[in-house]
Length: 308
Image 1 (cartoon, rainbow, N blue to C red):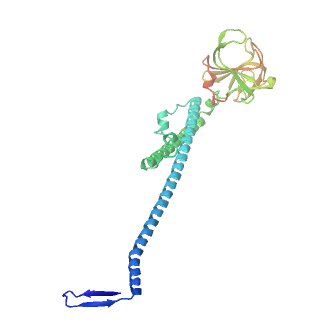
Image 2 (cartoon, rainbow, N blue to C red; image 1 turned 180 degrees about the vertical axis):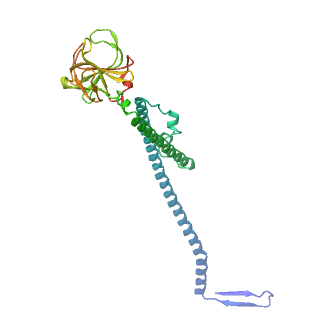
Image 3 (cartoon, rainbow, N blue to C red; image 1 turned 90 degrees about the vertical axis):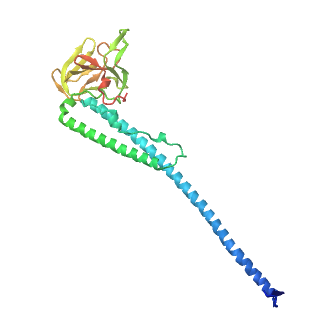
């Protein structure tokens, strides 16, 4: 193959003879020079796309895992709040029983709010506001738990100073609750014998079994005011706990020999066996609490109201 190049001034020309093999080599080199960079950039771009997809999948997986942890943590926070609410209720009950004022709800809660219900079921995405939300909840829970600890310290200090007075508060049940059932509450009811509506001034408990050997206990420290037979209440014990509070135990089968008038008794001390004496219809205990001579609902004194 010949190539002829004419001089610029048209004074002559130059002739080059190239073999076919050289032409082929030059062509291959030219193609390679054009193709290789394109191939390199194409492969590099493709690799970047693949890497970008992998990074995106990893990010999405990480976000899902973080969302799941957030939801789980939120659920745990709600559980903690529920347990704190239970502790608050017990704290209020203890304070009520021993004579301390209850802590107001707005002080107790101290900004607590929200919980698992504020989140959805998986599409929830974390952002700075959500992080601040959780930080605020944890901070509030810490402050509330600290307040609860201080409250228990206050209760403990009060109990140590007023232990004698507290021991005279009838806040336990007069029977073993695992052996009895609650049969009648405080308030108006149809009397089972007189067949008319009459005020029931106490609580009735009946045995689940072991009818003639179910024990009755003093609900607080005090002095026996009455012990003996009563025309309506049958075998009857009345205990004076001071501060105008009196407890009464009626329809006993037998009164304990140590439970006589003017004797001191302790909370939990055996008073006698449940029976059917006096104006009664079946084995049971009729239990009353009187404050300055007036019957009050024993539920106001029980430390735990949800046993029965």
